[in-house]
Amino acid sequence: MAKNASILKSISVASRNRQRNKIYKSVIKSLTKKVLNNLSQWQQPDDIIKLQNTVSILYSKIDKAVKKGVLHKNNAARKKAFLSKKLKAL
Image (cartoon, rainbow, N blue to C red; front, side):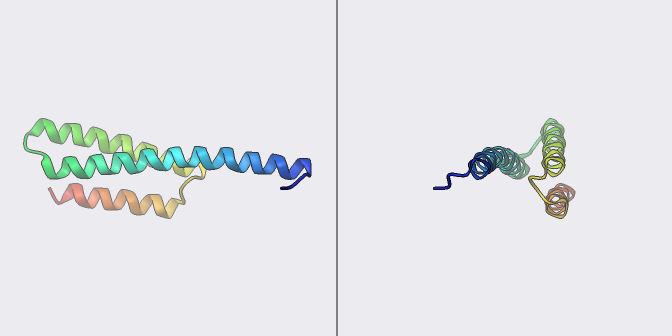
C-alpha cells in the first residue's frame, strides 16, 4: 500500500469518481431497459406519450453523463441513435 500523501489522495479521489460514474451508468442502463421493455408492450396512445417522456429523460441523463465525462460523446450518440431507431420502428 502506498504511503505517500498525494498517492493516498489520488486513490481516494479515483474511488469516489468510480462510484459516481457507476451511478450515472446504472441509471442510464436502467432507463434503457425500461424503454425497451415498454416498447414491446405499448398498446394505447397514452403509452406512447409516457414512453416519449421516459426517452427524453434518458436523453438528458445521457447528455449529462457526457458533460460530466462519464461517457464519450460518440458512445452517447450511439446510444441515442439506437433508441431513436427503435422508436421510429413503431
